[in-house]
Length: 133
Ligand code: ZN
Image (cartoon, rainbow, N blue to C red):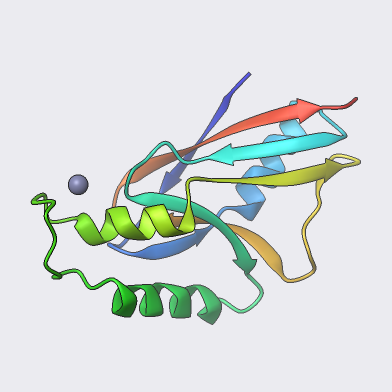
């Protein structure tokens, strides 16, 4: 079964902390042990895991990505969002997190982020849990 989790983004580029949404979806699944696969079915967004304790980390990631891959480069793709496609390709569309005793297994400072590069939009994250229960 695939669970669809909606994510609303509020700006062109942003890292949105979705850790609690994912934790809640895992809890609702009732699955205690397994692997939670998360997948963003979008070409201008991504999923990453990084520090969510200090929100300035996400701001820095967005800021430096914008410097590395400028909006107005010399791109072949003429939709005006080539930079967003490249950022999505670099970070990647999916992540997997272990589940133990019904909880996400994350490091103390880690959170799960939806990475928006062509917002604001309504987006989705697809979740599939492979259980070992
Ligand atoms: Zn495009």
